Image (tube, rainbow, N blue to C red):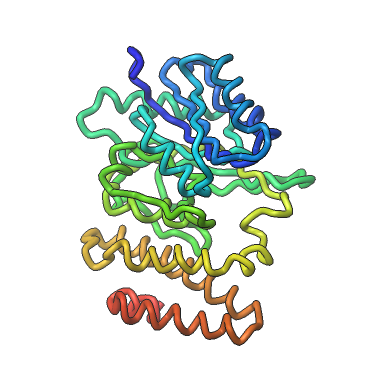
Length: 313
C-alpha cells in the first residue's frame, strides 16, 4: 500500500465499456483531494479497447487509477476481483456506464475520512442515487429521508419503516471493506443480477450505519441491452432465479438477531422473490409457470422459516 492509507476504493467492473470509462473515471477523480482515493478498473476480458483505455487512465493518473485485466468472468467475477485487490478502508462499486456526482463526492469523502480516527467506524454508508434516463430532463432521485436521519451514526433500531420500493441497492451502498471480507461475499460468475446479492449478503455483519442526504450515484438508464429491461430480465430469468435461491440458502435469517435488521432483510427477499414470480408469470409459458412453482417449493424445502414468513407477507 502507498504511504497514504487509502480511504475509499472505487471498483469499476468493465466489459466493452471503452466509450463510457472517461465519464465514469473523471467523476471519481473530481474530488478536491484524491491522494487517498483508489480507482480499480477491472477489465473483464473486453473485446474492444477497454483494457488499453484503462491502462492509459492508469498512466495519466499514477497512484490513483489501477487497471486490472482478467479473463471474462461476468459482472460478479469482476466485482470479486476488485474487492480482493482493494486497499481502501471503504469500497464502492461503480458500473462503468454510471458516474458519481462531483458536488457530492467531497461530502462523502469527508465522512469516510473521519472514520480513520474512531474506534468504531461505520460499517455502511448510504447515499441517494439518481435514475439518469436517456433523453429525460426530469431525473428521479431516490432518497432515504423518511427512514434514516442524515449525518449521524445509526443502528438498525434507529431506522424507520422502508417504503415498498425503498430498499438499499448497490448504487446507494458504500461498505467498509473489512465487513465485506468478513462476510465471505463471493458473487457468482457469468451471472446477471448479482447486485441483489451484494446488497443483502453482508448485512448480518453491518452494525453501524450513516446516511448522507446527497445524490451521489448516477445510474444511467436507456441502453437497449440493459439487464433491467423487462424483456431482457425474462430472457435471463434463470440467472435471476439463481441469485434468488442464493439469497435463501446463503443467509440464515433465523440467526439475524436484530429484529429490525431481520425485518428489512426479509422484506428485501420478499421483493426479489415477488419480482421473480411476476416475471415468470408474465412470460406466459407453461415452462416458466412451473419454474415459479419450483422456486416456492425450493424455498419451502431449503428454509421453512423464510418460506413461512414470505407466504405470510
